[in-house]
Image (cartoon, rainbow, N blue to C red; front, top):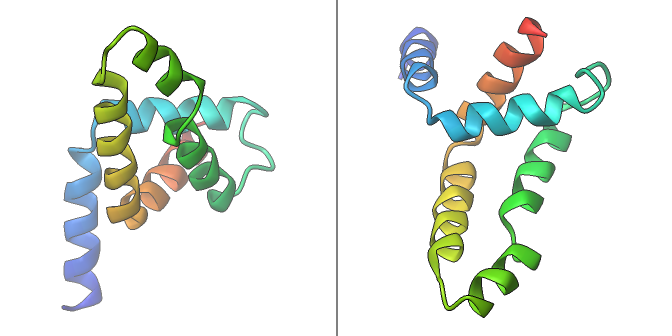
Length: 96
């Protein structure tokens, strides 16, 4: 695959990225107005947001597995689409 084809495919993917990932990256960048936040920090924060946490415990206490399913799907999306996360990071950082 040529670089131009890769760039074209990446732009198309970014244009149809789920709203939750855009919102999450925007929220992370707004913490310090994105000045000194790097892409590795954003990926780390996304993983922390959807890894096992208090939300999972509270969800289990209510006998609901919805948050577990959502977090698993989102972690899978993040892990399988790092290049999309990086592209969204640069797009959103430039817009701040």
